[in-house]
Amino acid sequence: MSPSSNREMYLNIPPATMERMPRYLMQLYRFKTAGLTQVSSQMLGESLRIKDTQIRKDLSYFGVFGRARYGYNIESLIDTVEKILGLNMQYRLAIVGFGRMGRALTDYHGTECHNFCVQWIFDVNPAVIGERAGGHVVRPLDDLEVCLKEEPVDIALITTPDDAALEVAHRLISAGVHAIYNFTAAEIPHGPNVFVENAQIAFGLYKLAHRLAGQWPRKR
Amino acid sequence: MSPSSNREMYLNIPPATMERMPRYLMQLYRFKTAGLTQVSSQMLGESLRIKDTQIRKDLSYFGVFGRARYGYNIESLIDTVEKILGLNMQYRLAIVGFGRMGRALTDYHGTECHNFCVQWIFDVNPAVIGERAGGHVVRPLDDLEVCLKEEPVDIALITTPDDAALEVAHRLISAGVHAIYNFTAAEIPHGPNVFVENAQIAFGLYKLAHRLAGQWPRKR
Image (cartoon, rainbow over all chains, first blue to last red; front, side, top):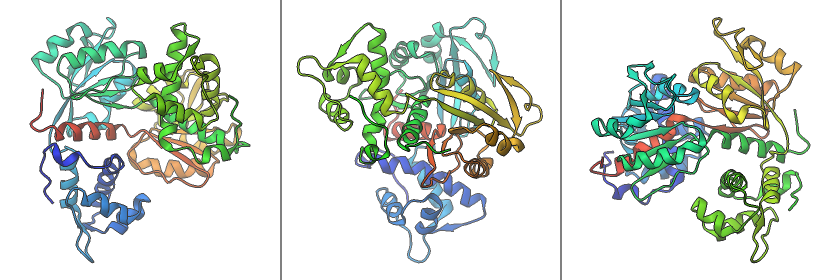
């Protein structure tokens, strides 16, 4: 139950397994909050509507095996999954674009420094630059390189208008940022040392629209 | 180039193909804005870093084939992909939870009634109920059933605190909502007639953290 943090161990994990790990973690938190100390793959599976065989398989990729008639110790499994997800470390964030979405993300519970701490906020709008948000002052985008040199970040969230996103991404990458969380509709290039995650909110709406449209005639 | 809107046609489309369709659409919009009228699968592929063979295969599922040495007519392909995604129809939205994220989504360009129109906004907070946002008045969550009976919606966006999300989802489903876009960390049950899309923002951070952690020692 102690995965080492090296790149090799993650290379052959199926992406679908990685997609499920945060869901396992959230459910384990809920079980813990509910006062449970142990959990079987069946319980975890039922609560998440995932087959217990799948859960055991997913965890086995990381060398985690439950015990017969006992399952997994919740505390220990949380600890392991946190390590797998890299949540045993702190990550510093920059938010580029302090519109509605940037504001929402600054306040987002996930960014209130459990593992993710907002370090810098940038915008181009003079009406917004200098505004205080949390412990931060919104800085002009022009200062991006200077700020990131002074205090580097691990992950940058891009919440600019779509047509500004690509240039911002290039500047972030040049300034040494290796992980970008893109909230715009722009295509941000992945690279050998640059990880990009997309949260293109419109896409979720499109997918739901597609499924509703497939239900013909539309139900109410 | 005229896919019919029936459920059968979508049943055997690989999920990965469906994931790529919105990206194709966005890129086609960009090509159109740039003044292009035709596009090859190679051009589309290069711009999105997707293999052209993959693009041709994806589109062929919908009976769309490019012409040799010409490719696809952009206007016509946009029309087709919009139909595939159900974007030739209007969808009415309810936003449940008018915190920072709810506000960001109310303003979100995708929801400003191109195809997606906000119809109702709900919250439990007396300080927020009655507030005007766009053309809407924030209604008390207690009125959810009455409002949805008066004017049904197609898609509900849940942006409540995590621990309120499940009850809200059950009420929405009981009130006849078939598509839920979940912005909380709660697990919302899918059903035979209920589509759920998750925009769990923390998960994107977890995935980036995981990949950064795999890069050991961490690079700056």
